[in-house]
Length: 132
Image (cartoon, rainbow, N blue to C red; front, top):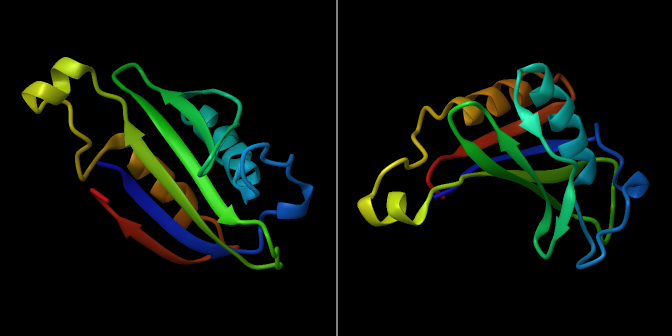
């Protein structure tokens, strides 16, 4: 199951993003910002790539790997945009069959992302959903 963080912000410029070649969904700007912050926190993070539901990066630590996605409706951009960041922990087939290595409520990567988002003064109305 994924953990989600939703928020509203004017911090990210949707009009400056590279167009999503699959669907007109924003997310690159949020992931570029998160990527920089996560690298500072000692995570390995890929460059943002497009997906049909938005944008994603792969994130890895010594103990786990994740897919982190971001999306917002870019069809009618306004200065203040509602964003969703989703965090999925990668698990092997064996882990899934045996019910192991699930994303915990206190997952370390999710905690770091939540701290980064809540710590930015230009981000408002933060909402967290675990096991979405």
